[in-house]
Length: 159
Image 1: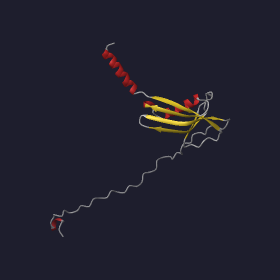
Image 2: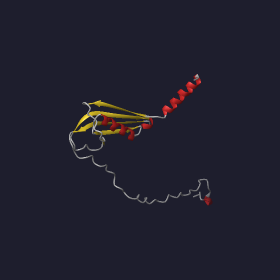
Image 3: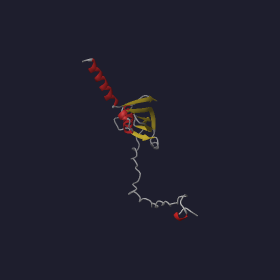
Image 4: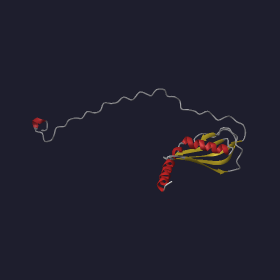
């Protein structure tokens, strides 16, 4: 392959790579990981109340998505997959932050101490039905025509 062909191939590879994205996951272990259970890992956001089940913490987990994987769904999926590999049953206190070309998620990976109730089903806001009727609109004020100060007495400008 000629030198020109190698340069074109290298530039083309860089352009293709620039449009792609990837996700990185990290953990800070608080105790030894458990065996993966194969069950779906539950995800509790920071604003949600903690579950009413006893648990112990295994690790702090983090996921960072770049490029076309910089979406909340991508980092949430990566976070729960990482937690599943560490043997966790849930990720609590999850916080997701999204930027222009990067998304970041963190949470606490936990293991349930015993059986308990399943996670509550998601609660959606109540349906408000049809949109309310728009408010009454006042008519726009009409401009009042003022006479020019240079107009004479018979032309509306004199006194």
